[in-house]
Image 1: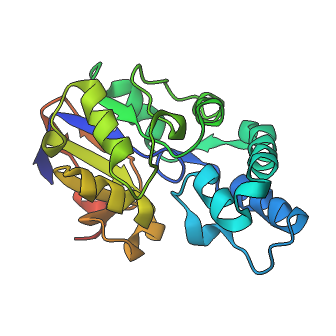
Image 2 (image 1 turned 90 degrees about the vertical axis):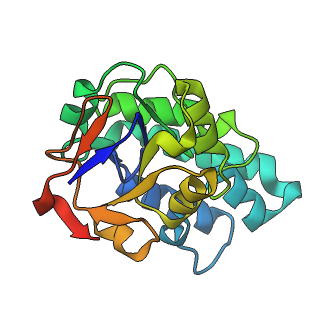
Length: 214
């Protein structure tokens, strides 16, 4: 499959890097500490931590609770590993043709990218750069703006419904779901992983055998 595009915008966790186990463990510890029964972070992948914390504990406990989850996740950031194809793809991309738009805070987002051995984009967008996180369009609007492209010329890679909604609200050309987790999202189509994908700044090439759903 060949897709014409000018820029690529990537979610990080679940698309470029695997941090799900450490994320699950950190939030499980946090939920126990704050007495939140029956909570599973897997139902909220793609949502900014600060937004979720505020929703769960309220304004009075927000600062301490937010600091605690940030502390837990930062301590486990070194466990992050790259997902198939991520390293080869990112190092092959033309300069200023791509960036990462993550819901993580700046320190955590950078730590995970570096731990996975990925290049750090010049125009990195984190949860701290926007007023509203995913599913609001802000992260992907800012990513496109920083690269100097219209969102309609950008392709987004996502694994979570919140991120897919964010990208679609931003008006991007196409949202590609990554991994089996994305099969339950509203992504335009879904690929197994990033292995074998290439982009020269004009054409995005997706191997047919990587497509899980059209």
